[in-house]
Amino acid sequence: MKLLSALLCASCLLAEDFPRQWFFNAHNCYPDKGRGADRLGRARRAGLSAIEIDLAWSEPRGRPVISHENKLTGLEPTPEDYFFAPMLPELRQMPMGRPGVLLFLDFKSDHPGLVQQTYELLRRHRDLLTTFSAQGIDYRPLTVMLTGDNAAIAQFEKLTPPGEPYLAMANREPPDRKFQEDLTRYFPEPATPFYRVFNFEWKHIERDPNNKAGAFTAAERARLDALVKMSHAKGYWVRTWTLNATSRAWGSSQNFGSPKALLERWRAAKEAGVEMVATDEFEMAKQSMNGSY
Image (tube, helix red, strand yellow):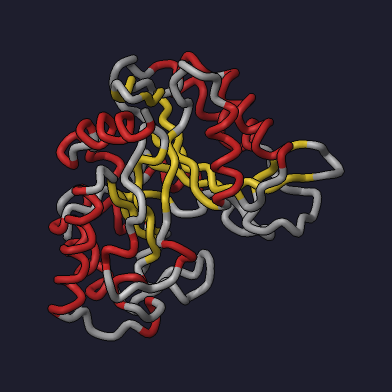
């Protein structure tokens, strides 16, 4: 039965079916340590409709909060206050049956309370949520993708009652997040109705962190092409993170050092068939979407 579901799912995950407006993902789109209070607004003004937030568990508050770390200050916003409250009026104006906003929820731990309350939060907005099953995808204004802690993602999958569609899709990552010379080792399992995206850090293409990557070589481009082709053959859509030029939003390790170097990778990713690219360069992404680059 599991094999049949996987095959059914793989057959419906065609690269050309992926919503093109979600190519650029607003990476870590929330305030942190007093910085970035305008990140969500900047992303939306730039025309980005794929938004990423990280979720941690606050024991004193007994609820999920938005944070890049599990060490909390107590001032972290909740996903309800930061994302859902301001976005619900817009989401409710969007047509049913069509993709609208893509929200990434990145689990920072596998605390049962974090997973359970995240699931309950999504159930409260069930009427707006895209759902996933072996029969396909029923698009609604808000689509959710789960990333981060693999144990938390597995817990979320088990919360779905038998026979009901999933309220989110999930990613799979490189095994142990380690670089593999042999690309086939990245895919021990095919896609399923729940696990629909292969999500990897860009260093699995160039091996080094972005700020040490150097020139983008023909061999690296060929590796990217082969990895994407293999991902699609296994039934996955493809996402990579985080490709920046000179952003200081979350440090410099994800920076290639110049707009020219970044644009070369963005173009290569799009031409290879990558469906999603995470970036902190919201305004550059807008210019790219408008054809300015």
